[in-house]
Length: 459
Ligand code: DSN
Image 1 (spheres, helix red, strand yellow):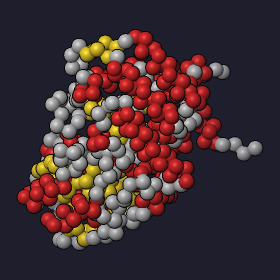
Image 2 (cartoon, rainbow, N blue to C red; image 1 turned 90 degrees about the vertical axis):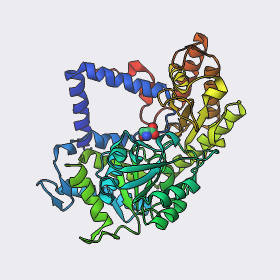
Image 3 (cartoon, rainbow, N blue to C red; image 1 turned 30 degrees about the horizontal axis):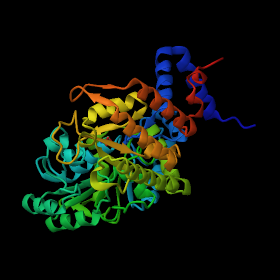
Image 4 (cartoon, rainbow, N blue to C red; image 1 turned 90 degrees about the horizontal axis):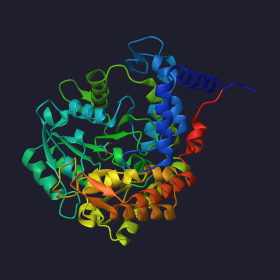
């Protein structure tokens, strides 16, 4: 039988880790157990495919490969070049893009690259306010995008929807060089064409950051911005079930001249923006892992998962409303459901997050529209279904989870914005039912991790 050399090396690596660093090994086992026996409903997290993890743990990082395929600053890059070309072609195919850069280490860096490639420091950009559901890298004052550039925030209207009248008014008033259409806590469909119309009115570039909905876009479950925006960025770990990392894409305008003095095109500026402006040598393991994730995106199973992501979120929103919970935005079009725990249960977001974590349900506190609490406290909780969908949790299972969430939050007695007590019998009951649910719907490939003892290495 043919030996799988990569499997032999992986097994040797695992044996080495166990023999040489039991402390770290034991922490890794603990984390594997935690992920297996709890239900992650954090909208920005997900589960990397096992083949993706295999690529991430490989020896490609032994190669230094500054530059791009065919134009590296180091020798020894023949195979890395082929892997990067494969990742680029799969990225383009998945999204119908004509340009892809697969080197950004994260979507935040991808956003910085786009901003710094198209704007001079001090120039104006228009991005969604972090408090309204935007992202740090869209112009937040605590991020370089808001410190080194003149960032103007737009928000949402009273219904929680993107306030396009305000976007247009602000654009006409401030004449930004860049308008960013992207969100992290927005459960409704994004009208990319409307953003582009506004950008064209003021001669701005448009960046679509589809980090949160990357899988839905790839599967046709959300409109694509690829040929609408000048540039699109995304991360590969949320809905592509890939490695943590970023991508930069461009559609039909990839060859548009964006610098008259040099004749530089959009794709040239972006390539130079990644290297050498922002990054040095790329991370070849991650590029291989991205190639693997992108190799499955767009296939039948991937599309099924994307449909399940939306179906489970819709099911959760409906069920929570049925149970009397105030669901922000009235529901969801994507994977995100935001609930107002302050007006429903009299709890802050941080208290709800901690109480649910005690019961094996992992969520994150989130500010709601017009929130009176600071970001570290918040009045809401954000739920997301990326991980539940890959576990193939059924609608019935999701309804049970919603019932458990309500049961826990009703049994919490708040003592202050951050302190509380939780009924011990509820904690025990819900933990037990979450463990059972997780055992029925294990993370693919982690089946053995349901029982802690089975993870202990034996010779
Ligand atoms: N932006 C953070 C979130 O949405 O949770 C991390 O991706």
